[in-house]
Structures are given as C-alpha cells and as structure tokens.
Length: 392
Image 1 (tube, rainbow, N blue to C red):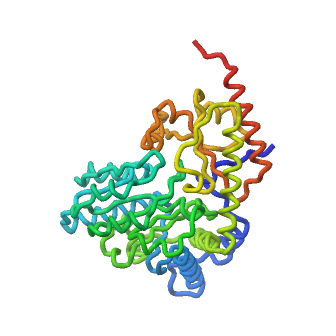
Image 2: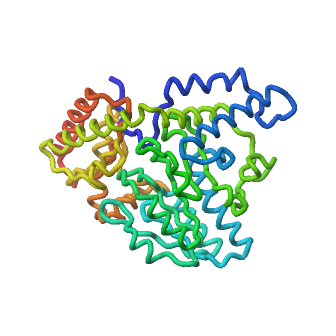
Image 3: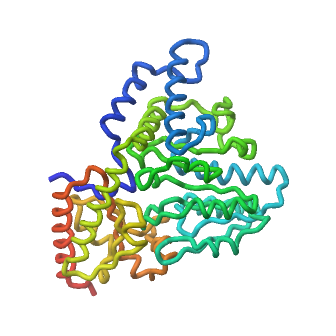
C-alpha cells in the first residue's frame, strides 16, 4: 500500500504540467542565462524574465522587484540580515526589530544573530491562543526606533492567517519596514496586490507545487539600495544576489505562480477546505480525547489541521503509523534534542499538551478515500499504543 501523504504544508509535489514546462531547460535550453553574447544565453535569460513576470503577477508587483533565491530560508535571511547590515553601515538609529512569536525558525534564528553580532534589540510580538496578532499589542511595541517588523502571512503549524493589511499599515506609519514570510500563503489565499501591502516578501517554490531549491524575495524598488547582499560575485540580479540562476527551477517557480493565479484556484481552495473539515470531524468523533488547536476552521489555512491526542505522544503515534501515513509533529528537533514547538507554546500550550500534537495537512490531490483510510489507521495506532504497558 502506498504511503498516504498528509504533509502538504511541508512540501507539495511538482505538478505534471509544471514538470513538463521545466524539462526543456535541463537539456535543450541549458545555456547560462547570464551569457549575454549568444542566442542560447538570451533564450535562457528570456525564460527567467518570463518566470519573474509570472511571480510578479501573483503578488501584484513589478518583475524587477523579484529576486530569485534558493528558497524561503535564504529569502528571509536576505531580507532581515541584508536590511540590518546595511542599516548598520549607514549608521541608522533604528535599533529595534520586531518578530512575531510564531515565525518560522529561520526568522527567529536571524533575530538571535542580529542581537549577538550586530547589537540590535529583538522583541517578540505576542499572539493570542488562535495565533493571531492583536493590532493594539503591535502598536504598543512600535516606535520611531523600529527598523523592521517581520510577520508571516500564514502559519505553517496551526494555519493562522494574519490581517497583513492592517498590521502593515501600523508598521509603516512609523517609517519601519514590513517583511512578510508568505511561503504558506499561495495555497491559502488569493495574493493579488498582496505585494502592495509589504516592503519585503518571501516565497518558496515547493510550498506552491513548484520545485525545491528555488524561492523569491520581493524587494520594493525604493528599498533595494537598503539591502546588503549576502552573496557576492558577478553582480547578477541588480547586485542583490550574485550567482548563476538555475533556469529550470526559475521556470518551475514561475509556472507554479501562474498556476496559483488560475481561475480554478478559488474552487480548489474551497474543495480543500470542505475535505479538511470532513477529516477534522472524522478525527474528533473517534472514541479518543482530541483537541483542535489554532483558529476556527474558516479562518485558517484550508488544508491545515493541528490536533492533539491527550495522553499520547505525537512522535509515538507517527512512529506506529509508519510507513502508512506521512504527517508532522508539532515539535522541532534541535541538535538531536526534541523540543516542544515554539508555536504551540506561544499560543499557550503546556509542554505536555504540545507533545501530543500532530499537524495533518492535506492538498488538492487528497481524496475522500484517503481520509477514511487515514482515520482508520490513526484509530488503530492509538488503540495499539493504549494497550502497550508502560515500561518501568
């Protein structure tokens, strides 16, 4: 039996249509896109320019504001480190940085670097038990000494969707830069004109049916002189990120962005939401105690379920389910030591509660039959674990 995939927020598959669009650029149109002296280089460059335009259309910006990276982790690093390092070089008096408490670890890790190595004061923006930022709380933290605030659009663990428009308006009113990690947003929402509400925005190909190894950082044109590069070399991409661009991956991300803009996406999102709600009902009506975490179902990522099984350890449940179901725990592993998820702790869970949480994330391809099979296997895994005598 094939493994049932319930980890779409970790990575989506590359769709067949997108794969077909990428294939010619691996072998037929393989020339270096920065080779400006011959027609084959021009063709590769044109493909990348077209991909940038597709991504620009997704978020409502201009294609010269799109910078390709290796993924959202690099995009987030370039946004925050690049901005802060250039601010230091310019002698800026803005020394505070605000990061939401449920940001991805790559953002929080950059915050620690900016504190230790560059002398910034990094403050956490709290969230409520649904994972939402209260505008009043944010406004109390803002001031003329804030350089940047980083708030993700859609949380990867509990699916919370922020009101980016109002949060951004508050930040920009103080002259601060607004950065948004929007990696999870394309599946969750229509992003038309999204870029107009932010100054810096990160995207990742493999969260939106594109390939791994490619991402984007949107940098508002007026801000591009305020970003110090992390990678130096041939000065590609307006000197913001040097290095030869991987034409097939750029084409794949552009095709994924185009797919996210098609008319069928609203229908697919609605079908995904209906199927997700059905699965949540199936799980919560089992004979076991369960707790759903995060915002109400109609205010979260349409494929996200964050569910706790009190009295059980999530890693034990997933271990029993192998190799039949692929899903994720709500915990992270640092240096080989499992730790409770910082996201779940931020919304008020105890370590014990957090350790019981599994994130099931479904995708457009998930079928009703897979939901039924997964529910049956989860019930069986809990039964098996409940019958195991504790070791002394």
